[in-house]
Every structure is written in C-alpha cells, then in structure tokens.
Image 1 (tube, rainbow, N blue to C red):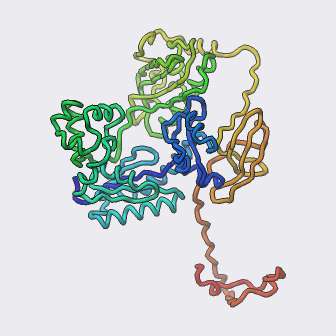
Image 2 (cartoon, one colour; image 1 turned 90 degrees about the vertical axis):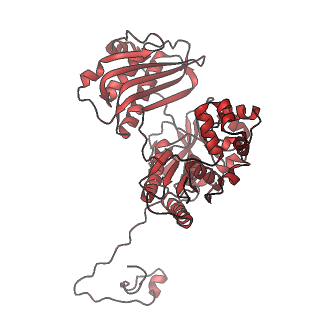
Image 3 (tube, helix red, strand yellow; image 1 turned 120 degrees about the vertical axis):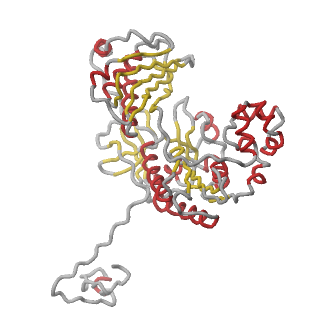
Amino acid sequence: MRTAPTILHLDMDAFFAAAEQAAKPSLRGKPVVVGGLGPRGVVATASYEARRFGVHSAMPMGQARRLAPNAAYLVPRFAFYRSISEQVMRLLGLLSPLVEPLSLDEAFVDLEAGDVAHDTAGARAAGERLRADILATTGLTGSVGLAGSKMLAKIASEQAKPDGLALIVPGTERELLGPKSVRILPGVGPATGEHLRRAGMTTVSDLAEAGEDELVRLLGRAHGSSLYRMAQGHDDRPVVAERDAKSVSVEDTFAVDLHDRVRIRGEVERLAERCVERLRASGHSGRTIVLKVRRFDFSTLTRSETLRGPTDALGVVREAAGRLLESVDTTGGVRLLGVGVSGLADYTQEDLFAQAEPVESAGERGGEGATPVVAVAAAAQPAGPVAPAERYWAPGHDVRHAVHGAGWVQGSGLGRVTVRFEEPGSAPGRVRTFAVDDPELEAGEALPLVREPVPVPVPVPVPGAVPVSVSAPSTAAGRGGAPGPAAGPDSHPHHP
C-alpha cells in the first residue's frame, strides 16, 4: 500500500452512448441506448438520461424498450469507439509508462512510474489535467479516481461519476469501506454476495469483523484470504503495463435461429474475416482455430483444430472454421456462432501448406474426419440465380448522400431508410427518407468529434513591398462595396 494516492483509475462516462451523443447533435440531452437491437440483444451502454428510467448495461434490450420506449436505440460502432479509445490511451501514456487498459474506456495508471506525482497535491493536479486534456481532445468526459491501491482508485472513480475526480487519502481506507456493500470489493459477484448474505455479512465491516479464518471456511483459502485483506483496505496489486493476449475471437447472436446450412456457413466465413482482422490488428498469429456454436436448445458446442504453425492468413482460418462446422449438427437451429484463434504468437509461419494441414482436432464429439474443403464449397453453392440481398442500414451508423452530405441512420424498414443529416458540432439536422437502394446513398465514415484547428497562414513578406497599416475598415467594404486597402501584419497584432 502506498502512502500517497498515486494510482489513478480512469473511467469514461457512459462511453458508447456519450460518443453517440457527441457525434449526433440531435441526441444531446436525450436518452440513448447502445446495444444489440434484436429480440435477444442486450444493452451495452445507456446514457445518464436513459438510466433515469432504470435502463442499465447487460439488461435485455426488450426490457429497456419497455422502460424507455422513447429513447434512441442504436447499433454499436466499435471501430469509432476504438479510435476515441486510442486517443485517450495516448494521453494516459504521456503520464506514465505503466498504463493498464481494462477495456476501451477504462484503465489504471501508475503516476509514480511516470514521475508526475509523488504526493496528494501532485496526484490531484495530474488527474485534473488529464480530465481537461481528454475533454479537449475527444469532446467527452471521464471520471478519475486516485488512491494508494488499484481497488480504492476504482472505488474512487465510481464515486466521482459523472465527470468528476475523487481522491481517497491513504489511511482513511477502512473508515471509507466499512459501511459499503460487500459487492464493492473485486471478486464479489452476485453468487458470492448471496453466499455472504446468508452468512450474515452484507457490509465490508462485517467481513473485517468475521476474521480471515471464517472467510476461508466459507470461500476457500485463496478467495477468503484475499477478501479479508481487501476488507482491511489492503491491495498490493501492481499496475501492469501489458497483458499477454491468450486468444482473439468474435461471435454473433442472431435474432432468429438460423436453419439454412448455406447461411450458417456464410456467417462462419464472415466471422472468420472479422477474427483475422482483429488478429492482425493485435500483431499476432495463432495455431489453433476454434468454432463455437450455440444451438436452439442453448447447448453450446466448441470444435478446435490445431495447425502445424501459427497463421494470420484469412484463407487458412476460414477453411479451418468451415471444416469444423461440418462436424456440428445444426438441423435444430443455431442462435449463436463464434470463431476464434488461440495459441497466439507474434510471428507468422511462412509455410502456408503446412498451416493448412491440421495435426489434431478436438471437440465434444465428431471432431475427426473433416469433409474436404473443395467438396464443401461445391455443395454450398445454391442452385439457380440468386436475388441480390436488400441493403441493410443499421440504426446509428454513418452514411453519406451525394447531395445532402454526411448523416446517420435513424431507422429503416419496408424498403425505406430514414437519415438525419448532421455532423459533430453542427446544429441538429434535418431528416429525410430514401429508398434502401438509393444509388446516391452509401455507407459513410465516422467523423472526428473534435476538429483539428485550421492553421492560420503566416504572411510571407514580399521583397521591396511597403507594408500598409489600416486603422479602420473601409467604409465602402463595410457597406458591401469595393474592398479597401489590404490590412498589413501590424493591423492585427494578436495574429502572428
């Protein structure tokens, strides 16, 4: 435990929803819910306006719609959120070499390691400076907690929400923690919390009074001892700059169970492409390809195939995932699919032929005897002409119109798509409706929340020219007539 509050915890305020409100002027100050919009979707983030209705993260989307029927419901834009997160993490990196990201919007920072704070005053100044820098860079707010340990710094940032800073002075930990719920401690989830409640322990002070032996008896040696120390306010976990990734994966839950084998294989191929994109972005390759299938009855099957060498080749991952799919019975319907790569390395095996030859496969059953890829691909081709799929416009996603410019999708259906045309920093824009196949409407790129300042050109002196000073604007120019003499560099001393 440190004697100065030099561990900082940053948590961006309602990150996904706040980013959407900043990007869409018409949504500012209004309830916004971001998450999966299908019947099985869940809330990823709710704005503070939506939380007043009882909406919170991890809530089923159907329940959220009942609580806040007039809120704006948007599909997540993870690439957009990731770009903002990178800006925030760069600011944290300027404070210290020890930055431990926990998610896109949350991280610990060791201020002592960056030599920016060694006492209470220095830590507070660093925290306030960070909040100001984040607002200036991203246009969003974050809450900062400062304490002598990671546990207490995270508790402090929760106290500071939204858009605040809280500092816990070392030595006051037990007094602060005593009356709080046991759920505030790391590692105490709903099940552990209920187990402790049945034993008569609902507050942190109850845990401290029970003693280590009693907690070990209830929860086991490792968990009981750790929880007792935390109840005393002790947490000596260091800020770890890098965590080795063990796997990279993506998955999708479908609003309606998939039964068509061709559609299922197409979804697996699409997930393999997203997985490889994420794998390459992380600078890794991997040896083991994993397929996850959750069926109509909620049973979940996994299949894996280990290659002879690590790869980040899309064709290899896609074909391996396709082979694994052949060993899974999907006739009853599929509600979730996932593709992952594990056994990560920071290099790629050059011998692609060696990669494509699996050395082992694993699964609950039927993991061997894969169907040749060529035969599967041939069987997957539908007979006869295929009608082009209707263009899908996800609510909240960016679009651009050839005439009206940048906007975002408010909703779509019955062959129409409704778009609001506005940009970050503009006034709330107008709404227009188009056919979903309108050739002038296309997917757009997310615009930055904070525009880079336009540099003011520095006048270049012309050899032999005589500078002219103007003390007042020309009368003719002020009435809209011919312009007067050009202003010289001395006429506006506040511009270089």
